[in-house]
Length: 227
Image (cartoon, rainbow, N blue to C red; front, side, top):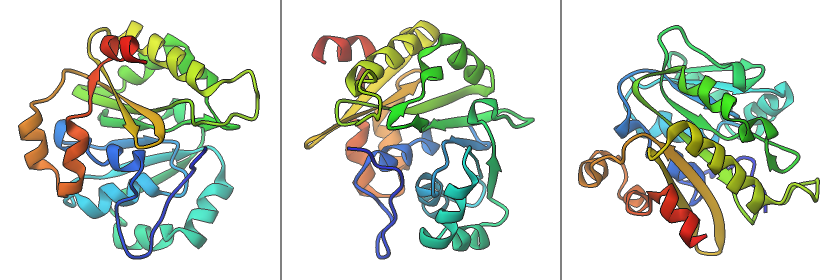
């Protein structure tokens, strides 16, 4: 039930939560986007190939061997060549990620041993990330779900997702929304900030296939009642 990275030879979109991540740029102010948990570059590829050159990504990945695999097998080397002024990869702890001017948006995809990392069940981690945003910046997060298969049986995917969202709600209050992918995949994504104008959001998306995600967001409190 765990997906680390996805790359197709003949298409850009992935039919997964990476595509949801690709809807973030139109609803954030101009500026750098942080990718925390860079993996083999699936999220970066979508953003760099779908959006104009003024959008740059700064990625953090803890394990340098993952970047090596991305460069060898996932086309990351080509992505770096084609967008050398737009992609910056850092090896290190993603929770320490920062840029001098602040992030316009942060995409969080941090898992360890098949589970959302424990640090993301601590409100302080979200306070720290929030402090690194520009004014009106947003955070979008892969919070997992029942489909996530942790190596530790005590780290149930659904329970970890619930706890992660609960502590996020402590930091972001009513400005927290959740999207569940469906179609047999219960993986969920969280979004911070006020809910954008949905029609305007759709019009600014570069691919029509991405527009269906816009209508899927619900307030966290409503998500709790449904889940």
